Image (tube, rainbow, N blue to C red):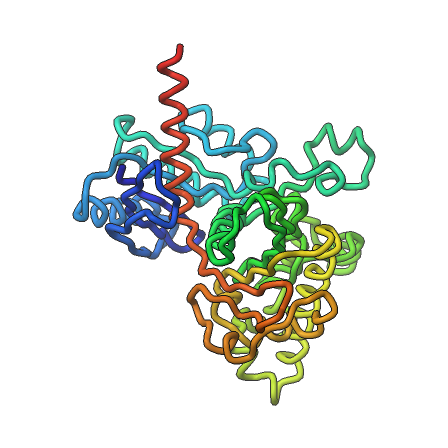
Length: 382
């Protein structure tokens, strides 16, 4: 089956047309075409049409898989798209407006162009964490308020973690069901996850993608009282402060740049760049240590995402000093791993260190095929 995996962001539409065999692992999917198109002035129709034209030139489109960031409590697995599903995703926009809104625009544009003849599936980033234990999912706020407003920790980057888990198992030559992994997705958005037996036990992002690690423009963990303190001090609404925490904070807020490469180049002469990197790595180290405790040890630490894949120096700083738990990087292996899969731990390290190149599109395509197959079997059984 040829599946168009569509990933709509705030300023671009990324797609890949993949030939998928339902009986084969996601890594076996064959890429027929791929491209990233810029979105100008919110014109997703034009960008999606361009993606469809490029994909059709490479082969027929049998199905479309759409990445959707926030599935809330309702969507805990890939779901065939119909009008009701579109309306439900729209209702979740308040939890992830920067992400769900572009996904919805892409879904609508794709449905308008292809009609109902081509099946489509929504694949949710939160689904990987849907079975979080209550001790990890609950906020310690009044129970009645949490239940009334659906306030809990959902977690994100699930497609990346599903791929990283599968590839870690392949690199280690062991079934995912046997593995304990601490995975660090480090990119523009950053998060950490404690994974045992292929399931998420804890993760750093929460109700929204704002919680957890320091990110390019997001603050990550802050004292909640900062929200009201800034609202009072600056005489602005809480929504404005939340906007600052999402788009003006993180590395950008600390050093005026959201690009780790720029900060690494500047840190020798710029104390703000140096501090930003120290804060970034310190927060990641805290979560790495915490999740080693949650898992009671680990078989591997996995680095993925744009920064995790391409920045050996950041990996070195995060992993430094963890020899006490059996994690030691090999300097040469680490330095050589840039955007490719690799084992970067030293010989004798009892906790492996891995670099996995993120491939959310292959997971989208595999999940789409599995979802449509399951839906077809259910329909046949009625």
